Every structure is written in structure tokens, then in C-alpha cells.
Length: 233
Image (cartoon, rainbow, N blue to C red; front, side):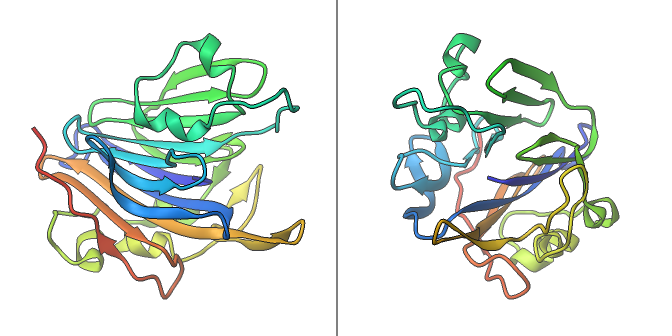
């Protein structure tokens, strides 16, 4: 992921509401969300074998990974960061073997963010409220549409637009303000390769279960679909 918009309200029927955009080289192959790993649902990076977002309907919880800054100097092969959302979080000495990252771990009662910047590992619990996470870190940017969005009731089985209300519009575009201003959805060329916002996801965890929606063409013409999940338990 390169952007996560989060609403955390432990007292709400839906304590965790998450909207996320993945930015990547568009030619990098990936597989659509499914249970590619036992009990974990998400898109699979075909190159590294990991994921950028993993939904666990039984825990229940959702983990999201963002690349961090600064880029670390080359020191041989590092493990893929895409493994981090899929299992138990390693000890700090192991986390330091990865490239820089932010790892969000969200459950109904608690949301944590683990960040490694090449110098130190920081673990923190997020306060209830709205949060914006980008490559530069937690709440360094503001996204006005998030503050204005109503709280949906995204019960599984409803059409995406009906279930999510304002939150579908959250991922249709807009701009960040703050320390790292930029558009929410990007498209640019880097070293001759096209880089951009290739997919987006909506995840809700609440009393009515876990809901996961996905689109491979984020923007105003996005085609959303609900990812089938088993009942939690």
C-alpha cells in the first residue's frame, strides 16, 4: 500500500473502517484477492509471493503494509516486506533486516502501527479517530474527504455503493495537504516504467462481520466487487 485512510472507533458497531490504495509499477504481476495463504485473504504479489494487505476474518483483523522512507542502501538480498502482513510480527532485530516500512495491525479493540526507518523501530497504538498513513508516516498529511465522510454500515452482501456510501467516493480522487502533499491517485513514469495506483480496497470489521471490497481500476469509474469471506469464529 502507499495510502491508508483509517477510522478507528472501538465503541462503534464498525470499530475499524479502512480505505487503502496500492501504488506500484503497473507491469509488476499480481494476483487478485483470494485465500492465497491459509486463513488470510488479499492480493498476492507474484514476484515476492507476499501481499500489501491481508484480511483475517477469524481473528478478526486486517494488516496493511506501506513502503517507508528513506530507501536503505543496498546490502545484499533483503527479505520481502510482503511477508510482514501474513504472520506474527518478528522481533525488532529481525525487522531491521527489511527495507523501511510501516505495518498497520488493526483489530476491533486495538490498532497498532510499527515503523522501521533504517535507524529505529517504533511501535505505537493509535488513538480512536481518523488517521492518514502514507509512505512518510502517520498523520503527516490531511485528507479532507475523510473528515467529511459519514460512517457507513457495510454489512456483507450489500452492493458496494450501498454498503459503503461516502467511502467509495473517498477513493475516487482528491489531494493530500500537509507535509507530503500529492494526489491520492497517481500515475507517472519512473526510469521509463509506468508507476501508479493500480488497485484499492475497502475493509470493515464490526459486529456484523468482516467485509472486504476491491477494485483493480481505482478512480471515478472504479468497478468494485466484494471479496467472499467465510464467517468469523
